[in-house]
Length: 174
Image (cartoon, rainbow, N blue to C red; front, side, top):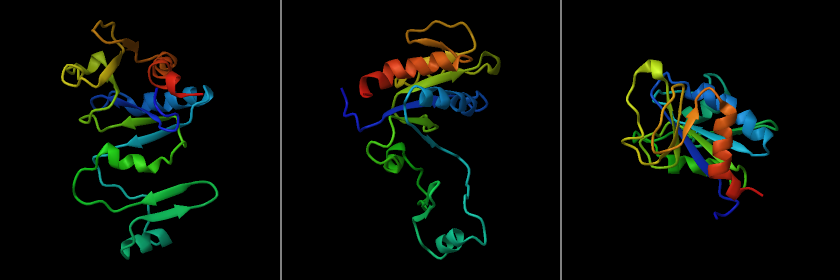
């Protein structure tokens, strides 16, 4: 059994357009209602900026501060300029202080090795990912499939949440 202060990690691997974000937004409330604190890491292949020109945090970052921590009584944002190298999942886990979450859901980083559920939509006619990724522990699909790993219903977030709880969280939660 792992240290209870170390969160479980589960990722979702899928081709673009499969509905990763849609499923995750349905899973998080179910897991929260089950008493689990959930954090999330989402990888983007696009440049993005949460700061806006004219705001103090933007001006301070553009002046050379990195990281910039913007905090209020409601939320915190950490804005760090990264080198040109592709970030790794391990480098992002510092964002979750010890004991702050029970589960970290990862969207993206599909080429890294950590437990993942593959999402597959029959109508997209894409190859399955689990045949090349041994870290995929289940497949959630909208088709009736049978493989040597558990098959879940992509349209049943309760079933997927139960799988996550029973296979990654139950042994690590009080």
